[in-house]
Image (cartoon, rainbow, N blue to C red; front, side):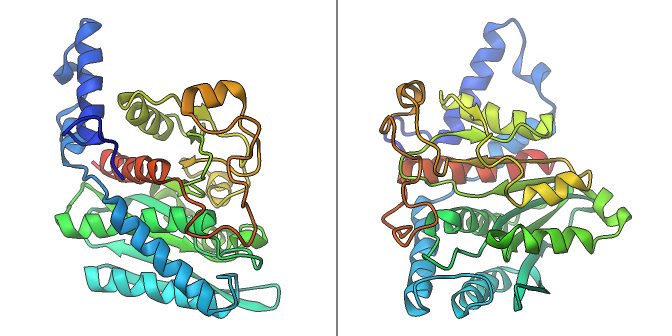
Length: 320
């Protein structure tokens, strides 16, 4: 849910804070950002947390109906992919499914393209859709999958037509070693890889004892996320726990600029982090990491809300 600090949205508050800071340092808003950058801040939508949570509820129901998980090669994964693809098809995306094999089972990536934009400059956002076999995977990684889905649907609702082309993806078999995303990158030619101006990864963004971590890979993408949170008065830290362990790694290794967000897994929150972000000192960011208790009860609404809004902000900002 949105924080009841102001009748303005978090995005409006962030934009206002950046503007005030610029003026106080002797500059001007116009001088600190191009017209297209200013428009991006104004146009990026507030992502309804209720919509994101509705997707999580659907993923939980799918897992419950399919042996308690949504793992690679299992019926729950296929049903999850079908759910997301139907939403995207109805919204006007061009979707495709890429097949691969891992651990003797067939896996699938789902890729969705929004019509328009410069096909030689692609802003791509993704999240892994599979869970581990031991649980439904609602934070890991229903949270990232649902935020990316709702951002894509916000693109469609707004009729957004950015300068760059928008692509969204949901990866299979991440839990087996980034298999799906690596398959996708390996099957891109060099010319196609060069067309991706940035890949944004979202893996675990609603942890119940959350931190606010930003990947420190591509400087422009990193700054985009850090500026957004700074505008909300939220301190971020460099993401180290999952560095190289999620689906941005194959893109980074292929020379694609990458970035992303993370709210923490089984590392334990320090006293300094609890002072900044609240929560419980000495407890894991996600005590249900890779466990059967990673259900819809294993989500912090505030972290999920803030991070979902940050997903949309970055997509709008970087696609101008």
